[in-house]
Length: 88
Image 1: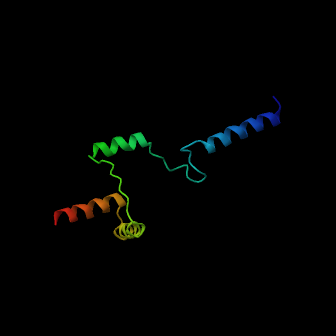
Image 2: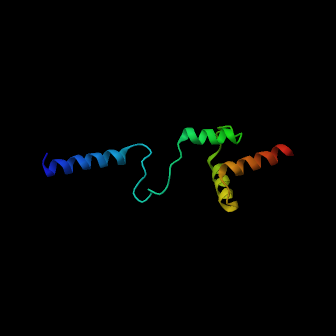
Image 3: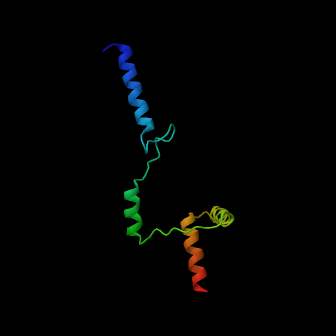
């Protein structure tokens, strides 16, 4: 194979790796993506259960703002607020 053919082959391999799902973008190679299956196992070990709800957009913005102010994960904030609301 000629040198140009090898370069084309290498470029195709590189493009395939960049387009692959879960591939890290440029500059993000040090960030490790957690596999969804592995994350689900971790959540189950902690006793967490997925619970989907539909909320008004303005309420979601308020929750996100409050989570940033308190430096909490959105899941932690919602769990805290629900626990307080149910305790009353």
